[in-house]
Amino acid sequence: MLRTMIVCLAASASLFGQQAISVRSGLVHLAEGKATLDGTPVNLRFGAYPIMKDGAVLRTATGRVELLLTPGAFLRMDNNTAVKMVSGKLSDTLVEVSSGAALVEVAGLEKEHRVTVRVGGLSTELVKPGLYRFDASPARVRVFDGRAEVTQGKESLPLTRGKETVDTAVLMAAKFSTKDYDELYVWSKARAASVAQANMVAARSLRSTGSSRSLSNMWLWNPAYGLVTYIPRSGAYHSAFGYYYYSPSTIWQAYSNYGGYNSGGGNYGGSQSSWSGMSNSPSYNSSSSGYSAPVMSDSGRASVSASAPAVSAPAGGRGR
Image (cartoon, rainbow, N blue to C red; front, side, top):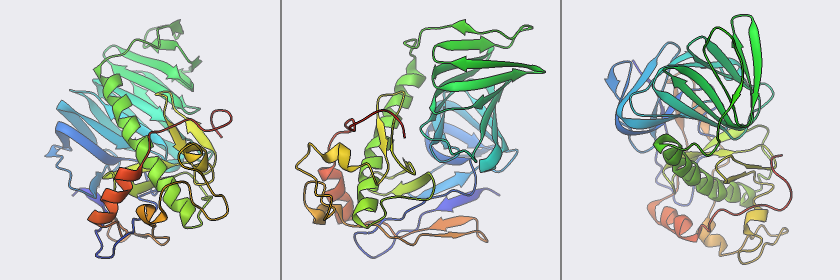
């Protein structure tokens, strides 16, 4: 039986839940086209997402899937791809790409979290935020941005931006063009744009309710966009796709040139009524393997969506 995270719609207006899920990796966030989880067709409903258990296999046919790993890490599967969840622990997430191809965007990585991707005889730990590609046939690892540590048997090889390696008798790095795009890359970039836009709305709402800093990176359900977005613990991260993910403490930078920002009153430009609040008390029910949080009403959703400006760069440098 599939475990499912459910975001429950509430009757109250102008609310949406905070942390969507943080207990394990493997939430199936988006499925376009045909996909199966352990042989069962994946049919997503608004606010209800399957969660992969250890040993589960997610497959795509003519379609693509977005999978959420540790907070800030997105795995995006190409057509005709199979991914196995070996371990969904946040402290030691391990997934295996057994066929096809997958891109992993890491927008944030806590020290206590670990993400490793296995393809062929290569086991790759994602050491820093960045963008990584994994192909199953032939087994290959590419680093578009960031830093990874690849192991093959007793050998180990660091890979940085613009470097790749393949599963051969001798583990060695080679250069590749980071402008070598394909349809999976283009689709993943479009997904990143949507998540980054939702991040701005969510981070701003957190700030307006006084939650300027969270204790850790987190996933956040944003009903205005109908998706789960990523909220950094602090700072702002500039992704390899060119988008920013803001924490509540830095979101003012995105709006500083958009109608003004008042650090004392929490007004980031535009009317406060169109950015009405967020619940500060989401609940995770471990006994039912589900998550429940109040969400914004349809009228609130429309006003937030209409008020969101384009993603812009923050002042200062990249990352935290």
